[in-house]
Length: 494
Image (cartoon, rainbow, N blue to C red; front, side, top):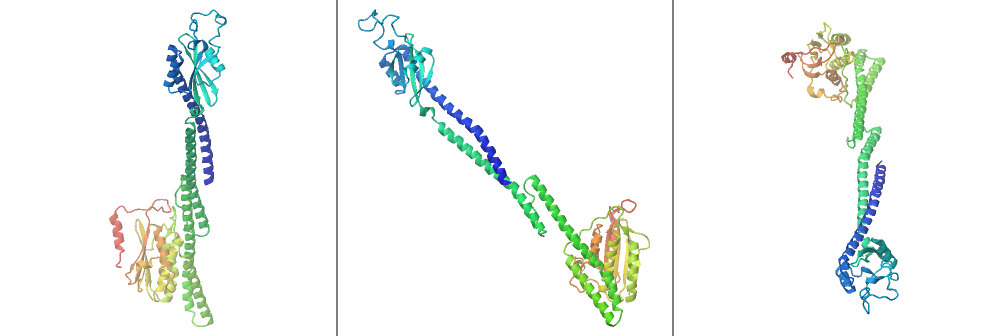
């Protein structure tokens, strides 16, 4: 593309230069010729006053010398006007009646031979033609041109003033002008090529960067991006490419996250299998079952650790989406209560007596509850009590999961994705799943000290801007004080 632009600019500029420079060169040549001939005519006219007064050779030679054109100017007089040869002025004086002196025998002063003063170059025929026609003429002579100017004498006859114009004077300055025109033309061509080359580079470089980034992205370099530079069309293409690359990265991250989340959800039935395997007692079958459960847990942990690199992105729920948090809590507590009874744990559930709709998918909320309750069973000793409370307000729903265990030493670090993945039997994704569920509604997750003495995880699920199953928007608190009071009610000591 770059060389194509350069070639087009070169061809266009050359055509323009030729179209203008060639005629201009001819005009310059013609102007120089006209200038030289005009000067010659002006110099020839300078001798006119002298010719109107006298035709004496000496006087005319001095007049020619005074014009500064000696050697280039000549005067052609009629033969009858030669000094000392006028009728009545010859030897013997008076009029001559001899042969050749009569009117019929005298040579016509317009066609007869001429008397030459100065160095003449024109032929006798050219001089006679000018005298006969009575107008200036230009004759081609050796080394240049001769301007022949007719001039009336005092006697009424016609003399011809010849002014020689050398060839170098006719072409004076033409070569220089042509060189200047050629230089300007070359400069225009070079300048246009340089500008076209820079424009081509400006167009080609962004296209090359875009192609290089596309190849890099195809090779798996997900960080490849294109600077949004260049012409408007290429900037638009760069913006589209970067947006596409971001979406590809996000899709891959979501795929990894989905694999990690699905794998993490297997931890709940694995916990049940592990607890049941522990109650099988001794024996080869029991040992094989426990070994199989442990191997399965390790495989699931490996899948989760492999797929947990990217940060997920949870889409906002549409109108009418969501679930009944009370129903989901009751369902999951029915499942976990059986395990709690086997381990001698005291369980308390509150706030699930009436339906409470939230903008979270049923499977997502169930996964979050399973992650929190699974942590209780996994990280607290048998017999440790726990509870689940649901509190409903106008713009939020709070789910509290509390236990009477030893608590979490660093709550902030525990909320970081994968932070506890180095612990035995932990992938570090449980609390991250809970956090994503809350943040998808504009809420958050906090960890603190529970009234039972152990850990309390608070899930704040926002309702602002959400439309329920009836299509009406969710309620908002009209007074900020009511929201602050609601938050203060569930504030704990860190």
